[in-house]
Amino acid sequence: MNTVLDIKHLTQREKIQAMEELWCDLTQGGSEYPSPDWHIEVLKEREDALEAGKDEFVSLEAAKKLLRDNRP
Image 1 (cartoon, rainbow, N blue to C red):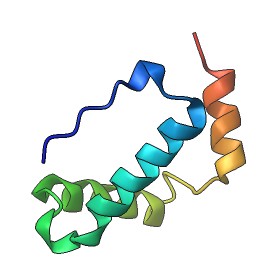
Image 2: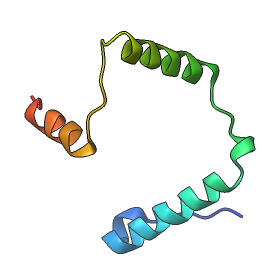
Image 3: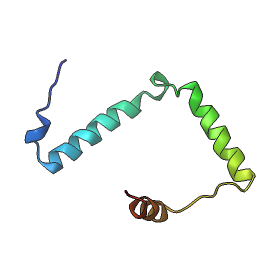
């Protein structure tokens, strides 16, 4: 089946619904989409940085604020 959406003519609500349906479909077959090898390397680096005290967790709101405050 070949489906093409004319995205520019969809309402915001229709676009969000389309994204939700796509995401739901993509997440149904988890084993069909294995993570690339480099994901494990990145996760290990981040875990090491946390353990070494070189990094820390921040809340989602704090992360959003950091991103907004550091915009060019």
